[in-house]
Every structure is written in structure tokens, then in C-alpha cells.
Length: 329
Image 1 (cartoon, rainbow, N blue to C red):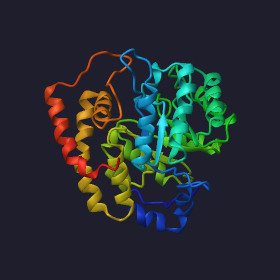
Image 2: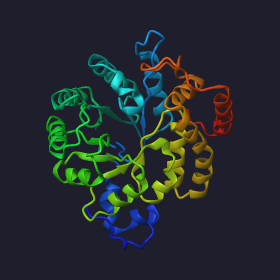
Image 3: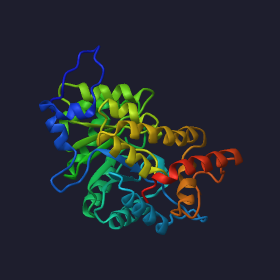
């Protein structure tokens, strides 16, 4: 679809002005489908809770699904990278993806991870996601980490061929460049969200937005550390952790309601958690969810080592006290 063409020297315009332009009308229409589902905003990569036995804790997973829906996030994604997707086996993925769809009950958009070791496994997950009533699909690259553009194109084309659901694709190999994703978007009508990764994602957001034939929604990750600048660049959202997902949704909603100073003020409190996560890793998200009464444990399947020390925990105490008045759920 067409997007405004900016001179290279131009600064990105404000998103509200961007969406008000006639050429941007198709993008605004993409935000929600005819059934009211949201396709832009805070799409949360759900954490996977484990019992001490390392079995998936279905009760906590359902509580997380409900917590995120009550927090009014714009979408949830499971399983994906931050959800320890590589440690979850075939039968678990089929069983617990259905549990999430049932628990959400249509209150927010649900994307089910369909990536696999190869295209045949991914196609099976895609068929299953549509069968259980998911709203969309989310796929990383094939499990062998291939960067060959022909292999990647064949892999994602195979996924799209077995389901009519909108597809979100997350960069996971060097071959999945922004240029590759935009070319793929021209070939696959259901490819809707591109989750960008890399050293300078905000620049990649601008590249997608300013393409003459832009039709993809650029989403990001990185712990939402660059959420404000990405929104200024007309990003379509971010996919970050679940612990403070309601805070991220509040920042997004304030910004897009024209309350940029309030959004920035809240972001400056939230961003401290992103800085802490850079050092501690995803276990921070589990500790936040444990403190908020969602998870029973902070167990991770691939390590038994809890890598937050006393100083980290005190820092999290202070961050939670700052953010507590803004909790939605």
C-alpha cells in the first residue's frame, strides 16, 4: 500500500498527523479487521510458566492469559522466543495454545506461534492454530537457522498456504533482512506484521514506513526500550515482555490519544525495567509475574540458576513501587 514519501532529510512526522493524511488511510484501516481484532499496538510475547518438575503450569498460563486480557493489551503471542519456545515440545504446543485461546475468550488478539524445524512441522502448527480459533499466526524462521532466501521464502509460503489467518513474521536469522521481508510481503497476501530485530530497529521501522509500496505493519521488540522513538517513527507496535505489559499498553494508548507528555513520563519510569532486563534476561519477567500473583515459580526449563542477586531484587522493588499506581490488572 502507498505511504507518504518523505525527503531523506525530513524528520518523521507525528503518527496522528501521518494517519490523518489521505495516503495513510489504508494503514489506519489495517489497525482492526472487520471482526474488531487489533493488529497494531502492544502484542505481548507470553512467558511460559513451569512447575518445579519442569512441566508446564497450565493454571499459571491461563492466569497469565487472563491477566493480559484484563490489562487491555492489544494482542498476545505464544510461543515465541521470550517464551522459551525452543524448550517446548510438539504435544505441549498443541495443547497449551488451545488453552490460551479458550482463556482469552476473544478479549484480545491471539497469535499462535507456528514456527517449526521445517516447513512441514510449521504447516501442521498453522493448521492447528486456525482449527482452535486463533486470530493469527506468528512465525520465526526454520529451526536450522537458514538464511538462504529461497529456503526462507519456501518456508513462509508453505505456512501461508495452509491458513487464511493473518501472519506475523519475526526476524530470527541474518537472511531475514527488512528488504527480504518487504519483498515477501508483496508475495504473501496474509503477511501482515513484521517483527523487526537488530542493532538499530528504529531505523528499520522508518524504512518500512517510508517504502513506496508499504503494506506491512512494522513491530519491534528489545524490551520496549525504544518504544517512544518507535512510535514517533510511526511504528505499528512492539512485542515485549509480559510482566509490565499493562504499563506498555497504557503508554501506547496515552500516546495515541494525543497525550504524549503523559506517555513519555510513564515511559521514563517503565524503561528502568528494560534496562534491568538487559542484564538479568527473561527471568525478570517471571519474577514480576510471580510478584503480581500470576506465576507460582520463576523456573526456566533451560537453566536452574536464578541470576538475580539481592541488589537486582531491591532495584525491582523500587521499579514496582513507581509503576504500581498505573497497573491495570
